Image (tube, rainbow, N blue to C red; front, side, top):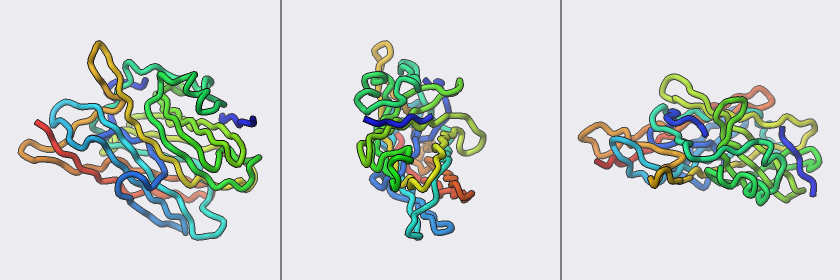
Length: 268
């Protein structure tokens, strides 16, 4: 079998008012926001579960975020080189009690091998798709499963998106999403750089993920993702910008997708 190598986060790390979202490219979750630029169309979507959240304090939640990349030219869109997801500054990511996975433990590996090595660090799952023209030069499978593991990269909190698929040839890859703080409405950034390869191997067209890890600390259930509903007192709920994604392509094209506006119901 041929596989190709690619080359706990901090309690209180600011994320979305109703959730943390790891960006994904799939049309299966939530309503989609679309933008078209220079013949390339990006569609992003997101969903949080549950939508009823405490007005004060936080509760564990699950988050799915998704979208697609398409293009009018027959050759397809340019190659994606960087993806940044900016997340709302409220809420938090809690990794205390979640073991860390080391990049070397899952690169390269099959899905089964990755789970055997880092199953205790698993925080979510999803799927991946690419248009693969030259299998020998592609860093990705045409379709694959995504496993999201809690980890650190260069001293910073990260989520390791492990991708594995069998077609057109067995291929393994890991996309590290580093997590950092930022100012303004979006207080957290997740950023991944896609591998640069030679030849017209194809392009990324889909990746999706659902973060829904629960764990127990001293008998109390906690979530990898935790949030409250930012509704003012006297209001039953609120709408808020969940996330905003920026795509950078090898042609120099940059597309900033519209913010994903979502709503929640306040409890208490």
